[in-house]
Length: 472
Image 1 (tube, rainbow, N blue to C red):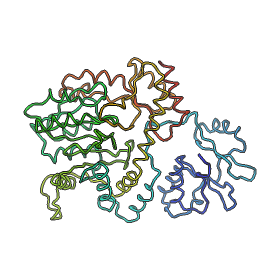
Image 2 (tube, helix red, strand yellow; image 1 turned 30 degrees about the horizontal axis):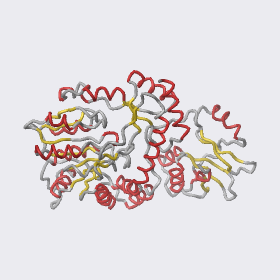
Image 3 (cartoon, rainbow, N blue to C red; image 1 turned 60 degrees about the vertical axis):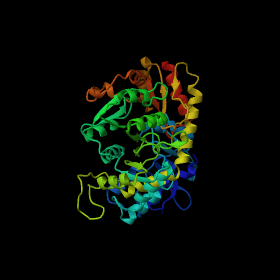
Image 4 (cartoon, one colour; image 1 turned 135 degrees about the vertical axis):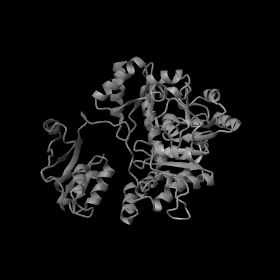
């Protein structure tokens, strides 16, 4: 990165320096005077502490910069400095004899590589501050409406209803459809627990079925076997960015008069037969948690083409309050609302979702190129008929006897990787709901998710691959 992206003038206000730190993604700003001489350093932690102590966003940064800072005059001295400060300093400026910044060096040896990080390099800060300064910071504001409309349009449906998170989106969808005690809802064995928990919240009975070998998504054949007179809905989960076989699932649902509630938490922008996921369900649910393709920090959304369900979800989301008569509650509802500030971030994220998906795809191709040379390692398939997956995480299958050792070695090298979800059928609280799930148990023990974040570069990919190779 060009060191100039870290440089800020000492007369800038805190708000502007926060934007600089956000843009450079290094957590640091170099503060210079009118002659471009380095006079201070500010980290994101310094700003956080200043704000917590009562500083205002419009105060000059020079009041809070660290004037007693560490720098190097010679790049060769940097390693000694890193060792001396024990990793407490992550970025060191390199200056000339007049204290002009000429470069910077980042500590890589102990640098933590996250599994996933949000990509916040668009209008996120601008829209967030607009919402903040407007004083519309709770669950009413222009960004709520804008995010709902724009995201629904992106997915190819008419209506969007924002929620506080992806789990509440699922519960809201089930409740709006009247699913409850005595009903059965079919879910896949490999999914995050929120999928099955939302069913249990309603009092309905979840039915856990096995997954496909090649896609790792819910198996339509197993769905058909699990249907009873009490079955009311199917929740297909587009796992790790891979679309389910929505053609078969829609045929099954139509034949048996079942609702489809898509769980799209990990698959923003994925497609089946050239239609985006989320456009097949009577209601479809998304998550905008911090590790998702686009994020609002916490947050979720239900999307639908059904106006009656749209209106019902809006009422249920807001305590069951009548939309015509304030403080008159028609049903027992919930507080599942998203804030205007969260939605402001969502609007900005949505503006560059295509750019985010392209970057993720290019990263996946880099991984594929080097991982393809490792015998016995199988990458998530990206050429299944009618399915256009997205790269949520870089997901692979590996020898189950080596998987945990690889995870341990990556952790020792400050690289965050994750095992696949534990099958629902293997957890005591859920196993009573499960049918035979042989494939999910096998795949779960082999599954590994690798870092999928903008901080990954070629050298870090090489390091990850080297560790995997060494273990194997």
